[in-house]
Length: 260
Image (cartoon, rainbow, N blue to C red):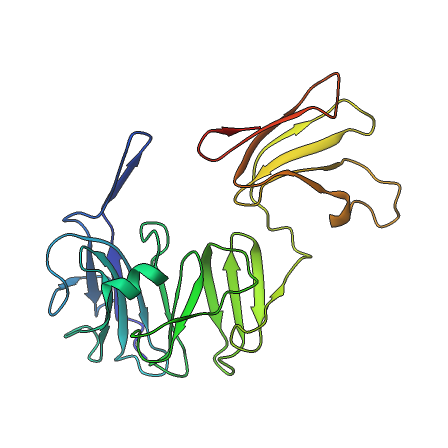
């Protein structure tokens, strides 16, 4: 209703090979009413002290309603009914930790565009609350874990599109049943290797989808299909290398310095 009013979450963190911290004095929630010309830090009724990552969303049906999912020593969900002037806590720490595991990595919240009392939080799984965040139930059964994006159909709130580490899943019944989209090339490839046979086979490590091998050519008129690929290991696949004298000997590594 007002394109000049924006909300932004600042996140102070540091991640190095030997050190990680999530949160600091630079974290906070801000609002502008002039399209970003000036910003005001929102503090009224919000938790004091060090904050970490913050997820925010504004209700489409009632722009006065704003939700904030806040990483904090007393983490939770806060709801504002006056565009951020004041806030009320709707979710306790225990519930927050169940639906927002690893907040530095996830911390995503969405409001149903047709009902400001219905909110979604997604992390390792996807969860929905119909009472402003007090109680949640899981709706991600049958989908790949690690959820990062969610689209809610404004004309049909049971129609959802979920983006996760396995690709895209679609539901038309609010998450009771999901349809995995298998015909889009969505894998994130870290590294590739190949063997010396003719035609040669290609091997790759995929983000959170294991390591795979498949042919570089096919006599099938359909070309190379999903059925031609086979898994050589799970987890977060990284490097894959093949013995140059024996294509049956393959080396791969995966997360946490795993090697097989």
